[in-house]
Length: 191
Figure (spheres, rainbow, N blue to C red):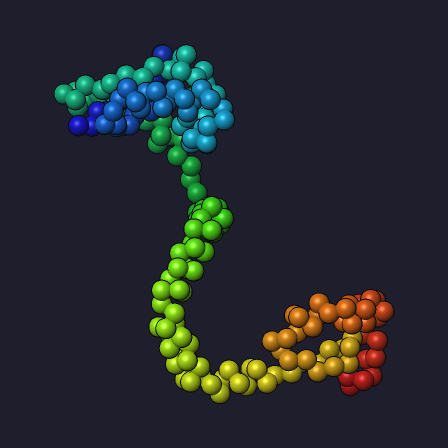
């Protein structure tokens, strides 16, 4: 059974209204979230607002009577959650979603890595067949990209396109790049 409760500051119409199935436990959690500045739940605007405006010393947690519909309508009109709800632009929403995906990725990177490793071990044959099928269907495209050569201006060598990043890390390339100061030594050679 859910219970509706409110957190109201003495002498003000502004309140926070919510529901819970276990009011004593929720009250204990609210006290922890609002009074402890180190809790991550403190980031919620409602908890921050209550903390900044007197904390639970000035705000009271009360259960709402189920029978009083007028009080419920009034509470919805003065709800602190609605007043403090930030108005986000589409760009802000996208940025928040991107940050969430990034933090989720970093938190669960090893878990997903292990799951993918197990999947690859269990489905080794299926993945091998898929790879062979893809190669056979796209053989010309793959070979044409493999055969592309790029001319390195510093070393005066033709290097395969797929090998260019490895080539740029070689001692010879780094030395030639330093000698030229990052500029091409022989511009006439390329013309």
